[in-house]
Image (cartoon, rainbow, N blue to C red; front, top):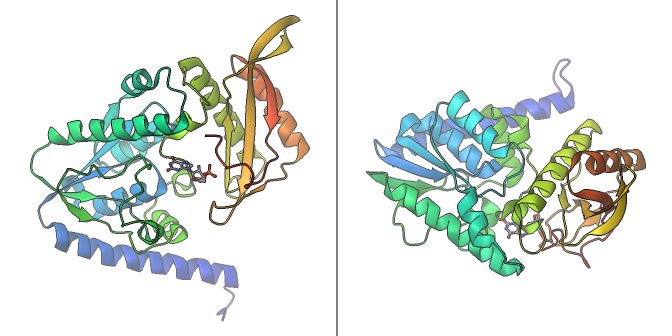
Length: 327
Ligand code: XMP
């Protein structure tokens, strides 16, 4: 029941925030008990789950936590920069930043099979993480952003294809402070911890990142077209008030070209495909009915601002028959 002149929505918000704050207080206590004066390692991807775990651990054990952020070169525009800005500069975390872009892209060169691409990205991620963690001494705990649905789906370890997964032959005691929470509860905790909205409300992003949206064999120029077009799509969705309303939206650049005209001359360039879907559980999905003026504006910007692109298409396919990603 609303009390005084506090509106019901406001009540709900206050209650949720109070619950999140109580959870944070409890977890800090538990983490301190579990970890004592030990050292903890965390693979920080910048996704909601690992970010919330990092913020909790910073509160609980401060500099006893070391975060490793591996940039595989397949991140969205500005994402690694945001991880560094929030965790190193604002929260004062011990953060090791590894730019492994060349290593990943060299390994992926010429590989067009989607599952092979995923294997290379996942395998390389574990190798980089192991190399970096072996340089550190005295680590006895490994923190993970396991959430409740991960436990329901598998053996409790983040699914194998999710970059940021656990290296199997490293023997640390696990620290999993959000393992009993659902995604929306993790977001509430993140908000109560003061993480930025753009991090807390982040749409799902696959472990192999933009790699599965640069269809076929990844090239640096086509990858740049995926990254730049994705940034434009996100910017325009935010301006149109669609951010946080549409479940997942991104761009894809296929590995073929078509004819067009640019500056009065014939151009032979890539198309960019826009995808925007809604779903409950990602098993099936419907296509967002994006207003025509928004689609027009995005098309105008992508064809003028993204090098190598002369056409924009909107994917109207629900899941099934299409999957959400193109690979
Ligand atoms: P699909 O394309 O199978 O995608 O309809 C369903 C959801 O899963 C995400 N996805 C992945 N996430 N590693 C991940 O961590 C992957 O290899 C992967 N493939 C797809 C996809 O973005 C969508 O949210």
